[in-house]
Image (cartoon, rainbow over all chains, first blue to last red; front, side, top):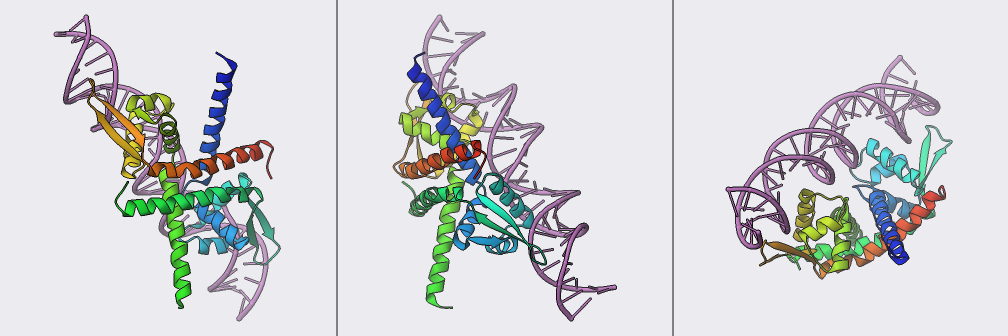
Length: 120
Length: 120
DNA sequence: TTAGTTACTTACCTGAAGGTAACGGATAGT
DNA sequence: ACTATCCGTTACCTTCAGGTAAGTAACTAA
């Protein structure tokens, strides 16, 4: 098999891995909402997030934040307050998701219009 | 409450609905891969898709295609061949996902680089 | 001492996503 | 009659995201 084919295959593989990783990381019910709020407010405490992200439970919020932190999208800071508070904010890397949000928003809006008008 | 606030609330609500719809529609393990293949090949039969989308079962492929069809992203055509074949292709509306793909791809690639380099 | 706040954690449950494997209907070739 | 192709369907199972509810640890204020 010629070299060019191997390269194309590797590129295709890298592409599909990147797509899958991105979908996996930003998918689910809450991730985007959390990132949006952090983007809007800058820094938020756990309780602020719980109130702003309507409907999320503390258990799920904890898990989502941990995943975002593990993926370098969110920074967790323990504040020296009483009672203790914890602040969350976005990393520089998280702002790379801007284009994704905008594209999703644009497509979502168009899609809702298509569905409302009955298709096509 | 002043009118401007109501407008802002409605806009925020519409935005979050659009985001959630888009994520829900394009999320999951297979949707993007299927759309990508259809975008690449133009028209594909059921069996072609099953072979190209490595690892998917006929049951799951059926379900995904039905969902995509119900959401006006894919058109299903029964061909008058023997044995019967079925062709799938993208709608015009499906091409609105281009920006989403590109953004996801870009972010995914950057993200993989960040993770490989150990964060930040 | 009692109650409240903050940030979780734990135990339990449900529903949906997705996998495996076998089967079915239509048609054709041999 | 037997086998094969194509496009699914059906039954069954496992896994996991996510929901509910209660508890915990550290601290404060009354």
